[in-house]
Image (tube, rainbow, N blue to C red):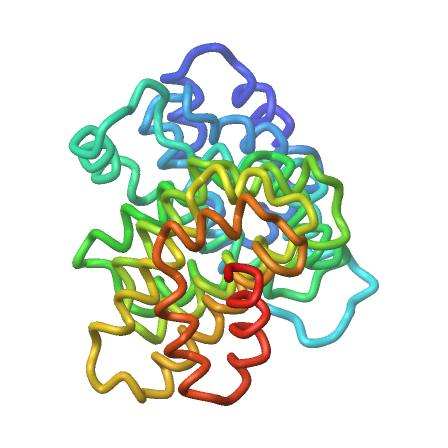
Amino acid sequence: IFSIIELLEMDSADVVLSILQVVNQITSDNTAVLESLCYIGALPIIGQLANRTQPPAVRTEVCHFLKNLLVKCQPQTTASDKFNLLDMFVLANGMKALVHLLSLPSGVAGMSAEQHVFDQCRICLQTAIDAIHQILTQKLRVAQKDLCVLLVVNYVGEPLSQATALFLKDPKTPPAFTDKVLQVWGFLTASTARGQSADVRYRLSTEAVLHRLFECIELLSPKDKVQLLHCILHLAQCPDQGNISKAGCIRELIKVLDWVLGVRPSSDPILLEIEDVVLLSLYHLTKVNSCKVNLRQAADAGIVPHLKRLVERGGTPVTRAIPMLYEMI
């Protein structure tokens, strides 16, 4: 087994590919060998092979290895005194490896180029998201919040937002996988929006990430829009909102209100929830932090008619709509 580790560290991509193929054949039905490889230090070496600079065939074999690992590590309902293999994977810089696996090859730009590469990298993106979801939902030694921070500090935002948009545009993506992706976004934004440093929050709210998230919101069903809008709400509640303002979030949120107004019946509970979440996000972006610039942006984007309509509707939104209207008069 030690010789396998040495061969995986060779510079020859052909040798590494052949060894990975052999490893995957053996470990697919032999848990003991898989555990032995993990215990003697294979995880960080295989994790490095997930880098987007590696040949596609090598990254694909890394995915097969990860799938074997995920199958062997079923969720536990109680804590164990023994390290789970996923615990070992996390400690072996596994979260960084998953971010690498999520990343499309460098130099890819433009929608058509992204779609072409997506078809080639689909297994890498899907495996990475499956692994991230299982790690965040499984009871491990590292707390979920800390795992989310590990992902964010390794810049998961941009590759994950890119992958999310590509999967949502693909009609072959099953609803269950869409739910999984949205749950991951929920974990990330809830865990890092508050109580973390400004640098951590910044990495999850760059203009590129926010632009793609709003692109994804347009592609989702009303029920799923709510989940992703809650993620935007988490980010809107951050004390430092410079990125969100620059990314045009206020304008995009008001576009969502415009969309709701054009849908019938407008009294649908899901649509009402969408309005409430959007209004709360706008309230935090304008009134809570007393940001005159954001208030002006909201007024210019056409929020006033929506605020008047929400006041007439009554209920909880009134407590947020009236103060915002007062500031704009």
